Amino acid sequence: MTAGHYLGHAQTLALMKSEFLYPELADRTTPAPGGGGPPDIYERANKRVHEILSEYYPTYISPEADARIRERFHQVRPEDMKRAWAVGKA
Image (cartoon, one colour):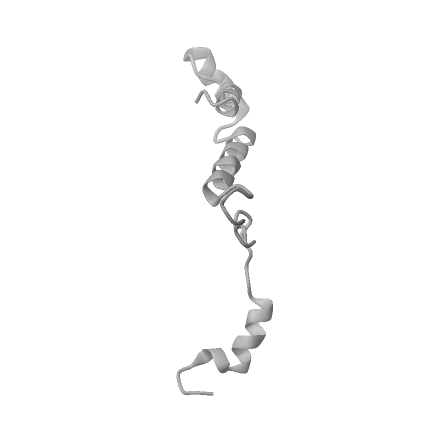
């Protein structure tokens, strides 16, 4: 092994076989000639953002506190926001 050159070290080879990550949105396939093919990273990420935001709404306060606030102030309900986002109106 050359001094300062880690690629030829046995530990590097061993770690390359076990310590890797394949991102969920990445497409490691060879691009199709002339374009086309699967959606690009932007399209996949945009779709995933919409999926996450249409399925998830965090609960920061108890249902009881939420009900008391809504009795006093007009609020847009989280369910309405989720529906609006899902159809692209948010």
